[in-house]
Image 1 (cartoon, rainbow, N blue to C red):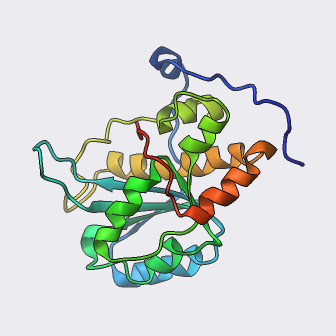
Image 2: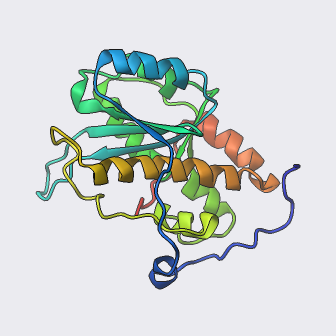
Length: 221
């Protein structure tokens, strides 16, 4: 199907009440929790072949000024599987940088700039192929561009954010945390596939990927 040229029929804004009226969904596919070098090596065999990945990170929250933590979890979503890579179990990113630095694989999410900066605390890499779906949506004059809002606007369902402010560095993640993290990466990928249909965004997508996620940061909520 060729790209669409008409103006999208999506609302520019969506309220909390409108979101809460939608059915709730979570990722229905396979979730791979990556906690060992062996598991990471197997996952990379698949991830290196992908050209589009939903992307997100989760960080232990801090409630004290001046204190921050590096990301504890990296989520990468293919069409059928979400890989949850527990960064607290690894000293550095290792061969993951091949995926994060690949211009041939789009890594799509909301507010990706902060995620990239956090990941670079584990070691320097040249971020390429990152696309902020919130900024793409803004090009379509959509004003509420957090992930929960974009999910409601483009996918017509809502996602839970209950586990957002939880301890992502804990020894064992809860089932709620695992499904929350997988869902965020999954919907990011699905939203991008919707946005990619609009011809007016084609140049922006190409430039954004080449820029390596240099878009201005926006809220992920």
